[in-house]
Image 1 (cartoon, one colour):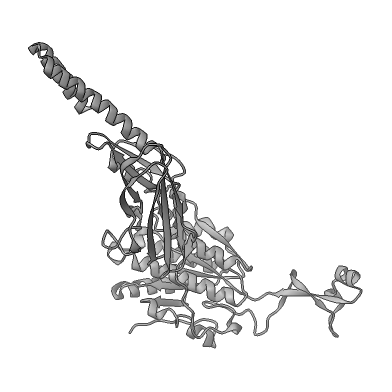
Image 2 (cartoon, rainbow, N blue to C red; image 1 turned 180 degrees about the vertical axis):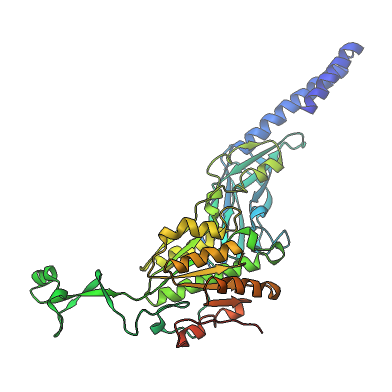
Length: 452
């Protein structure tokens, strides 16, 4: 626009001075501006791109290859095009040294300048090293092109973005015994497992001594041989992990390591329970990163590079207030659902832990221990857990990296509410032995405190 205003000014001056040569120069400049604008729009408008990223889930430590192909569909050559595959820095996906250590480009380049002949194509190849769990957006590809004089530039966001899920680390727990049937907080109702006749776990062939009320008559009629019902035990078994992911409990100076330790602890405990064949579930107040996905509005023709780089990124905020819940049950897919949820959760300023417990109490089964993973213990948090205990729930607590000056306060508040199964995890090296004493205990309750 400024160039067009300059041409009009030159034309006005040429008319005032009655200079035909100056007017001719203004007309030539005007034609050049019009032609360069038309060519720049045509060049970038006929470029298409596609991205290959076959692996959209991964483990920490893996590398993911990404290949982007740009093709010129026009019969005219493109003198230059700058290609950049976006890795939004605002959400932890960026090259090394640009704001955080979550991912790193280990080979290749995601930015390339090239010329494209008619029908030609060029590829951008690089690899990502997964360094922290999370849900990341890869792309879209931003193209920048313009005329050879540098008078006009055009920007486009092409290719749909891919979303990469990095699972949290799972640490094997030492000292875990199958007879314990849970990693933390089991309260035995009796020395032997009683059976609940209202919950049928399966059918087996009849054994001598089985009472008549155990016989499964439909299976007997279908097979022609006597079969007996198998009931689920009526003891407390399994766990519901309640993870506090509210920003108020995680000081900025300890991030992201403290929240990552909490997610790793939740995943490791869930895996330990799942491997015993017991029921396991997850409740958390963390927000789901998938809620921030931008479903539309990124495939546009942008005027500036800043707009092209910022508009396609995921939304910064999420207004979600509902807790994320993976129902407590058995099943081969149960641990995978919990792990996917833990991979996507982010710190939130929505529900506090006390509000989370109030909202999710009716979804907590009474035959599973409530394992609370907490970065801090406020008065409201202690009261919420105390109310669960008074309602008949078995409650255990794992404290994550609480400073020594705050630990005694947290411990006192929990003990005042009658919660005595308390664990303190200082770092990831202590996670394997977190449940070791639990498997060996001889009393219904255990206080496990590390004051060293």
